[in-house]
Length: 192
Ligand code: SF4
Ligand code: SF4
Image (cartoon, rainbow, N blue to C red):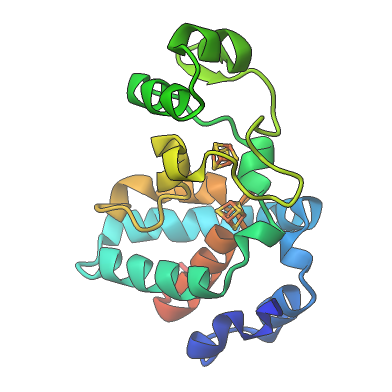
């Protein structure tokens, strides 16, 4: 898929540089995305702090609109950066559901795929995720962990509580990076 049209519905606001990033698919390259996110980190952090203080009434609406527009044109199969680099928390319901789908005993599923992290949460033993296929499809998609379903949280209610997380996720998820860049343009909060 050519994601050049990614921001077509909103390219009125879109800086040329962002269109170029998308058009060249560079934004899907993890190193390139990280470099861009780090370059914008301080200004985005400042912006999000102002946003938090201002707490505009339509913030959820704006985020959700951008989430939907950006994800409509984002090719996650071209990316899979979250599945390659972030370890989702695997809840007890996740363990029960996935092991059942794999027709494994839950204890065998845990022994084979999971470990406890420093917070005593279950996470995958290895990353990239053991259920990420070579074509970037998820082998347990219908039963994937809740954390995977909800990532990158830009359509969550009460987005005001998730701004720090969005800043962090902009280093991993090209869609979040674009959502934040668009938000800055749609809702400018001044230079001071
Ligand atoms: S379970 Fe599926 S969606 Fe979740 S990290 Fe693994 S491959 Fe990605
Ligand atoms: S959710 Fe974000 S990081 Fe994950 S595959 Fe889609 S674009 Fe990439």
